[in-house]
Length: 410
Image 1 (cartoon, rainbow, N blue to C red):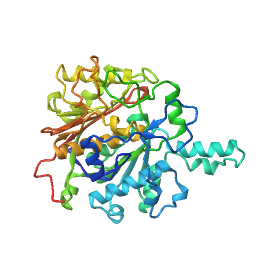
Image 2 (tube, rainbow, N blue to C red):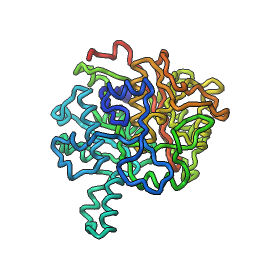
Image 3 (cartoon, one colour):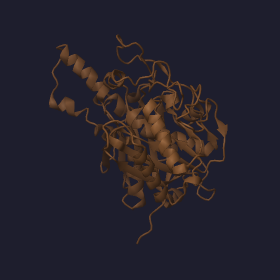
């Protein structure tokens, strides 16, 4: 049997409400900055509270070099911008990729729902009708395809992944498997999402939008804040990265995925625990080897209790520190776990625990160390990144700090 190849992360491309690019995003994550602000991208008249984690003063379509920025939506623009940042961080050019086998996997919940909101409003107002070609332009496949078109990559595999709020982890896992099995040498993977009225109003209608702030694991938590952005990573075969003297940010050592389909929206602790164990088995580690959990941590009453129960099933009464960056950047849906994976890698590199902000008092039903409000140094070697989603679509990623032998000078 051919041994599986080792897979490393050499490029990080975060686009978020608290920072764009590895350095700006990293400083914000480690310091505990909040990206919460009133929504400006659509009319919020009629909503009692309408804060979100919107990306202000940033037009992602300005990052387009070869694709017509008017031909893509905001989510695809985020994906293009994040891919460009990730490639620059990896010190790779589009020409480098043209000589490689490169899948482009992008997770999303709603694709270009924000553009469809606007299109629908204009149609209902009688300004235009929607033709099939125009509607097709907003398909989720346009997210990976827009990256490919902008990089002028003709022979790539575009992979849109729609497994709801775990889609970013699913996309990273897809690329991880493709490289370690020898089907690819380099991959672009992650997630992208744009804030939309449809998304916000849907969550608002079912009572899961927080009235004040997102407070994961807190006794006073009341729900999520919707967010947006993208997280794209460059994954490579380790030997491929060594051959070009690439900087290795982290090694992907394991991935677990499952779909229990037990309920349309409610999470199941047994299923989440099983997914965590699958990831540990895939990585060949024990639960005690994990130094930090980057939780799904939405800040809703049910999700947080269920996720902590699953964590304690696997880790026992003393789980590692468990944080949620959604307290800072909101819930970016299909991009959430991809952005969280980048935050986890930044934590590994800095050997520093990012905080869970907005914390008042830990819920007794969530007995974990969530690193409340202020981060702290820690000897991190392995981080677990949880992605949970509607329908029981769960995906868990394990990342390891590279040894000195695997790192290369920047």
